[in-house]
View 1: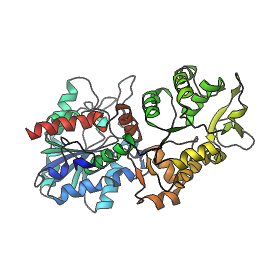
View 2 (view 1 turned 180 degrees about the horizontal axis):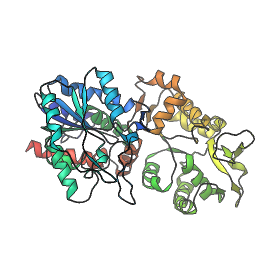
View 3 (view 1 turned 135 degrees about the vertical axis):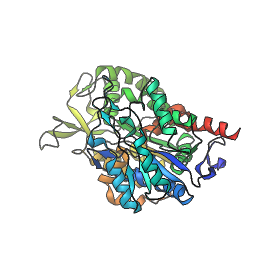
View 4 (view 1 turned 135 degrees about the horizontal axis):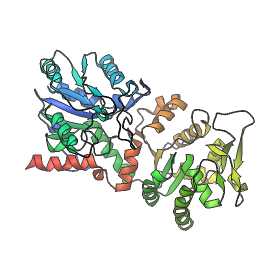
Length: 437
């Protein structure tokens, strides 16, 4: 598979010996919000790996993170039912017609789960005897060791390694180097699952695109996107911005003020403005929607304005959407219609009230039938599915569309310049070298 863009040192699940082996699998099933599965797409995309393991005689122990239970300031870990993996377990049981044991360990209030204890041994016995179809561990971020910087991390990693004979990473969306995605590869023979392989292959189509290459990027915070944004800017022929990122760019370029955009971010965006004066890659969406309030789409309290009317020093209320007529603008139409590769990681409006911009964008992109159209995961995919359900269903199996399961991972890989710069993938490569020797 090397010719398809996979590194020769990447250890692949299809090359692992699985018969009778307990296989620890890290998925990115981070699809639960407030105790409900919002969209099972990320779970469904991993069922091929799961089937392969079981079909070849492996016995699966699964794990994922859900949400951000750890308070960054205090370090406190809150194990809330809303961030439990239970809905994922129920979904898999229903989908696969098998019983999956949900492991349970004592929780210390504010401190999370200290570790994996011997209570799991009985379930592992049942797993090996095929009395159950699989085991699912609690939310990995409930464990103290998952993100710890001290000996608890190594202790947790060794506990994980003690459960299984080998490890499979199929969690493309989980690019951060934590115990369950990174450290574990030092202690077990480790392999890339099928989804991870497919995402890496498709990343090459973004990193080495057929040109012209258009990227559409939006976000709620400018400062968190600076690195990826600069890296994308170097790669693209055209760049369309949306959300607070676009508002920040407009403030920096036209010297106006928009509610919700900080002065610090405007100062940071000046560099992009200067760069674009030279290379003119940013395609501006001229018609935007100003709202007096974040409370919703309230009649008489929002209006379409044009950036052509901006004057230095002007102040505006919240800019919460792109007016669809922006996509009829000749420069915008040309950028979208002439592109051979389009990468979109963007929700254009302030959902759920302002949705017209995202709908117009998705339909405008779809009209380019020749381009390879690639969507980042997470919110981008969720909104595509919610706002354009008919279009989403019609393109699910279209060879000219690819939906990544992690938008942030794609941006990080673009910033690194390679999928092999992602820490968990780097760890698999190191493991692959060790396993060859």
